[in-house]
Figure 1 (cartoon, rainbow, N blue to C red):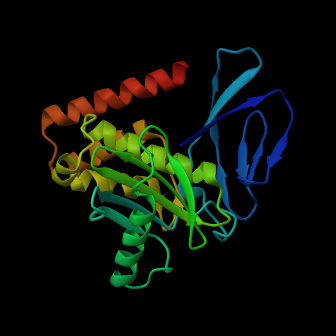
Figure 2 (tube, rainbow, N blue to C red):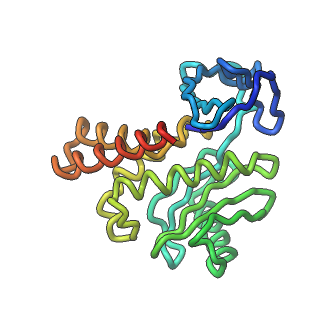
Length: 239
């Protein structure tokens, strides 16, 4: 979920994101995605915070104008796979994917991306990344992709994983809950199209799906995950 604020009553087009905004509705270009947004009144006078709930049922036409993600990578501190998802044919073979992951890791591992996410351009791809403990999070998009959108995907993935792992964002915990991480990816992106970036919504849906599908979450873990997601969502609506 992408959040933004609109000031005043003017009707504005933002070409970088492909968004056309007014006070009550949002259109994401005529050939892309039609979404309805729910307004939440902000504290500051004259502002209105709006959240976008984009669903595949509103998608029509081509993907050309939509923000697209090429892959999402979760690697360990040695550059080895923990969880990865590819949405592009730029890397057609397993060997090509592994080579790309090794290259990305070698180019970013010595940077300081623990306090804030970093952005780099490698082989005509924009890569945003962030590190936590012994885990490295990456989101890749084309060189003309909007960096803010890619950053929101990265932060949404990172925060959703932190919620589900109860802030134990470490390789061992990630491996023990690998099914939850892949469910996070499925909730966020479908065929490269960004569906959701709000970590509270993602974590809540993942916890519910996991219990319904396989019962892999204990009752206590599920309750904690849902309670944490509700708490964060309530805070976000009140701020």
